[in-house]
Amino acid sequence: MALRRTHHLALLILALVLIAIPAIQNLADVPLSHDIRPGYGVTDVRWLSDYFPPLRDTPGDTPVYILEGEQPGGVFLLLGGTHANEIAGIMAATLVVERAVASQGTVIVIPHANNSAAKHNSGTYNANSPQWFELTSASGEVRSFRYGDRRTQPEDQQPDPSVFVHFPSGIEFAGDEARNLNRNHPGKADGTLTQQISYALFQLVESENVNVLVDMHESSLSSSLAHTLVCHPRALEVGAFAILDLEIGGISLKQEASRQEYYGLSHREFGDRTSALAFLIESPNPGQEAGELAPDVVSDPRAPLSDRVHLQLATVQAILSNHRLLEGERFSIAFSFPFDLDELIGADLGAFFR
Amino acid sequence: MYRRNLRLLVAALSVMVFAFAGAALAQETEPVEEEAFGTPVLIVSVGQSAGAQQAKVLAIKAGLDYVFEQRPDLSLLEEKQTLILVMGASSKGLGAAGVDIEGEIAWATDLVARARELEMTVIAMHIEGGSRRGPTSDQIITALTPLADYIVVKGANPDIEWTESEEANANADGLFDTIAAEHEIAIAYIAKTLDGVGVLIDLFGIEATE
Image (cartoon, rainbow over all chains, first blue to last red; front, side, top):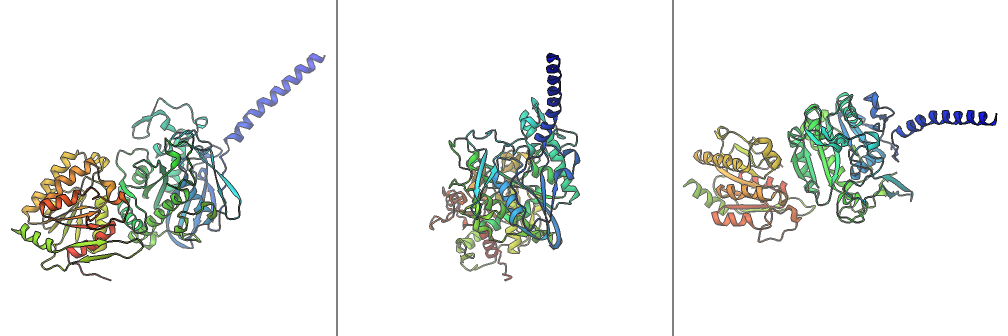
């Protein structure tokens, strides 16, 4: 009798476990949340899955913040976190969400374009790079932000193929590049998670009629890519105007044209397949420097995060102002902060966040 | 004969452009004694870097009558008065154009030869700074700059302290000074790319609109 009761109890426990495992897995699949505090300028908050429903309840879904200006104008998409270890773009986008107000046109901000990549840092460039970094706000609150990975997490998309074949070009990359969002554009509706994230972004660009797109990235301090503005060929003229304006303001960027063979990259694919003018900005990140023993991704005097955020946002503003100059008021996009962007230079970045 | 007279003209025209941080553009220009460079201008890229786009911006801001073509056929030189070669190598750009550096230099050399037949003035520009120097860019510079009537370079004037970043200095090794001296070519040094607007205004005798 006692043995039979024990047997029934064991079966009951087993049944409960079998029910619980999928539930726990569902909780783990919920998109990762971040400490982002939408400010007065945010007029709507959506999800990337609103533009592609199959992305809902997956690690690839991510918040999309809308800042609508009072005056009509063009549409601007600002991407951070395509590579979640390239934090200047993430923090620049977050700063826009928390402190900016649009005066004309629509500004769409995605601080974590690849939200799966943001989960944790595999140390792709430097095994000593952190998992988190902290900023202290003006009120003294310590806010923690994730330092993620270059690629979609393996647990969210596995296994890697031996060779990643880009769709639709057929160009081959190393297998783990199947999880690199910036090699997967334009994506695929029925593809991998990373391809679906890309596909959703393209749906957003098309449905919102995006006129200008900026993808914010970082590279190592010693990389030739650092301090570069990559422009799709249609965006070269706006980019050239922006480069010259930035130089007067003390920011020196190299300008590179996006080339035909850059399959899968945002500036090439969005520029080729949509009507948006596509740009990519590279700032230098000590956390991506291979030889650094203890990289300081926030306060390294060679490239403090505040300066890198300033570089990203100043470049964005130069692009938008020259886009307005060349394309006309009808497509004008304008947003501003309650502080001069130059105040970021050499400053305590945390003090600018809510 | 034409080229000798032109060299005398530009030798008399000494353009030094300074840009101080936070300050407005300031330049010292000796008055042009004879006719300025002629328009319309054809702006081309030698090396296929984005510098040519920046030169186009300078032309727009200067109010110059120009035609821009990244890598034109020789026929586009017809009815132009001045050819601006914007030098700077982009390995990706050359690949996209389907040429290698030797092919690029050969094309540009043919372009200059045809420009001479048409009695055009040739300006060699290098305006992307030190970050656009390297083995491939230098091949272009050493091959094409000696063929020019005038040089515009973003880099240090040897007689003046360079106050911008070293990365912005395309003349840190004095390459452009050497070429200018050996071939008796007038040269304008600019500290910031946008300073090129003032150089173009002076060279082409453009009246300021403000």
